[in-house]
Image (cartoon, rainbow over all chains, first blue to last red; front, side):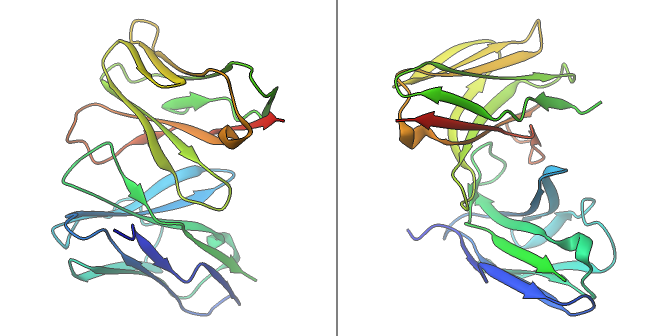
Length: 113
Length: 112
């Protein structure tokens, strides 16, 4: 299996622009997570999907952030409009049900100027 | 106060040394403890998974949990340059708890 696939790996954009991050989880995994990692705050859970349904979005910082999972093999995290403080590495992770073993993608490094 | 405390380091050791990493936590409900390894510019990967108190060994890696002290440790024996990475502890109260509490991560460099 190719593992969790994220795109783009790097994104540089200007403040106010829309950013869309994409994730393909491992086939057969029914739990999907979006995390954000910064030096200041470490790894933060943004949203959790189970069987394509958003279960917990309490970590989504503001209404500017939205996430979708239209099917079992694809998810997006959108930021609109983006701000410099959104600069971070965004990770998608998947797992079988609830499990301590999360499989992370390589991350999308976002820089908002 | 954070729920999980982890010294960010950095920690630099010579090849062959024993690396000792630890985390403390405040939530006595935590029962499941994990160590993730994260190489530079990569996502974290699960290294060790333990339940409750005690030791678990896997090759050169040993994880220890002391629930009475709310303290967990990871030891790396005969460290190699390939062990250079950031190590994050994570924990949860139940096996089906999707919301892991992560430490900040300790960056380790093993010098050849």
